[in-house]
Length: 158
Image 1 (cartoon, helix red, strand yellow):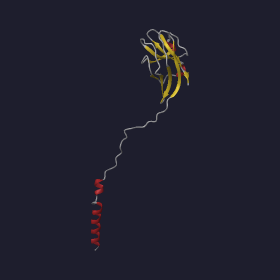
Image 2 (image 1 turned 120 degrees about the vertical axis):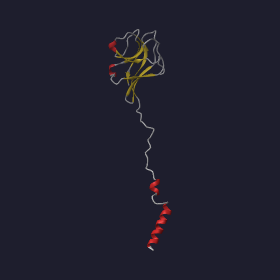
Image 3 (image 1 turned 90 degrees about the vertical axis):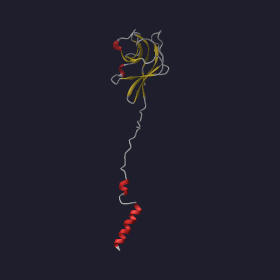
Image 4 (image 1 turned 45 degrees about the vertical axis):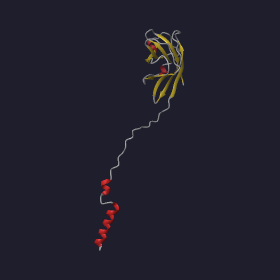
């Protein structure tokens, strides 16, 4: 009689659960799915300095606004959409040591950031990490070929 109860119990288990070991055969290990997106919390930009361009050489009018901003730990010089200057050969963006910039530059008074990207409109220039902005009081648009400053903006600290 005990044998009949054991047989009946085994048959009931097979019918109820679908067979011995079925769960182990059909079970698959869990797999982690790699995320294809990352979320980065952007730090807000902070204004470090700004100023309006004034024309130095009347034949090369320059206007607009220059700003130095810090974005995610990197510093940039930005010109607004209203920026415009005269065209010329080898025009450079320079940081100058003084508040006002003369028509003719001396090498010891400035550093070159970049060639000017465009004679008008918004643009951005990276400022190298090793540049100490405390040593520079203005930004200038300068024609290297003829050593002529078209215009400059005194950088007022924010």
